[in-house]
Length: 305
Image (cartoon, rainbow, N blue to C red; front, side, top):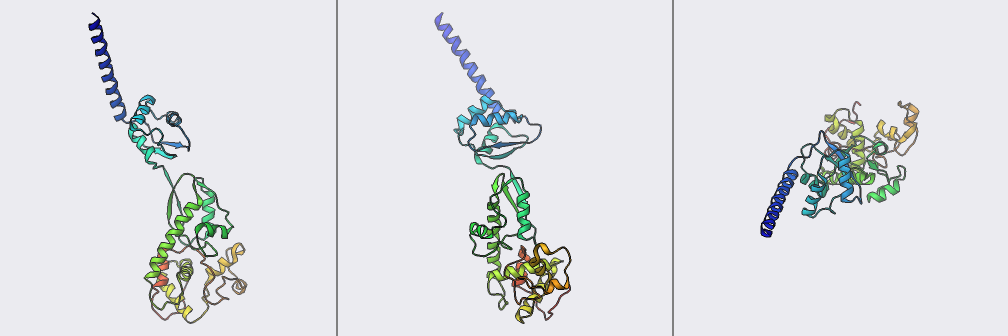
């Protein structure tokens, strides 16, 4: 009799275990019920239980027990990475855990258009709610030190492009990415420059490229404009370009240039100073950099703006 009871209990246990295992396999292989994508923000220091509660609070229909057993089975309960994640419709529980372990959080984008100056870039960064603000917008020496640059100003040293970042990335990390890309592009273009251009170094090429960028109304005109400026530099003529005057005026520029503005000395007024201004006046595109290093041939010393 006792043997029969033991056998029955063992059978019940085995059947229950098989049923539980089958249920476990079914649950973990099924898509989590989501009506639409959800955003889950995992903070540094969140425990596995806290993460589970965040999922449930966002109506991510996981089975907490199976979710935890799955994490224990894969030995990843303490390997989930902080970040903001987008859970798309159709994900299974293992796929959610893999997402959290790989640490591929949702990314945001910020765009720096060609021809923008540093003030415009900093203004856009300051308005972006997803970036951590660490920089003092007017402390150029500190910014340059953190970028690892020897130049006096960040103007023109950031490559115009769209950059992607995780939530709460620092503003400095974005600037470093843009700075590094500009250094790479500038070196590539400088290394393939034409001989006998009237530019002593890559930084001078960047300065002239920024002027060409601001003077260009149609992309195809960059080479022509660069040709005019390089010929004027060879002849030691004044560049006489309005964008440099406007840049040098700063906040005093109200939309119109007057004759007296063209005569007022500033380090950037190319109607007064000979040669190039001390820094770029904007972020030039790669096309503008290429144009000043491969200027269009010709004899003209003027162009129609």
